[in-house]
Image (cartoon, rainbow, N blue to C red; front, side, top):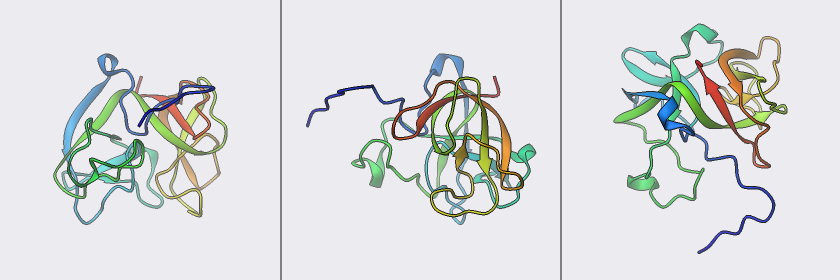
Length: 163
């Protein structure tokens, strides 16, 4: 199988640390009863475990972003890039500071634009914890992150978190 990039190279894969030498990651542990739906989402620490944001969480609880390991192993090892579902238990990597590719699901990201995460009124295509480029009063929180580019046609975009 080969890939041909005809117009523009993809911005990245959600959850990938895009500038490793400028980033800080640490190990955390998943909570099997509260799994992440995807990589590259913000999370919080609850009882010593890293879990996704929940409805009506304040911005102050955001601890970091879930990092996609490379190579992906286990049951998801053969998933196409960008579609792997995180495991439900065991250790995980958390981006505490640095640059990462995330999936923007709403709004149009721009260089130095504010990053938001949905915490209320989930409906397709936006769900709790999703990354958005536009504030929605009462439905999103402002994350301590900015967009580093406009992203690609699939919504993948680099952010700078806690920089």
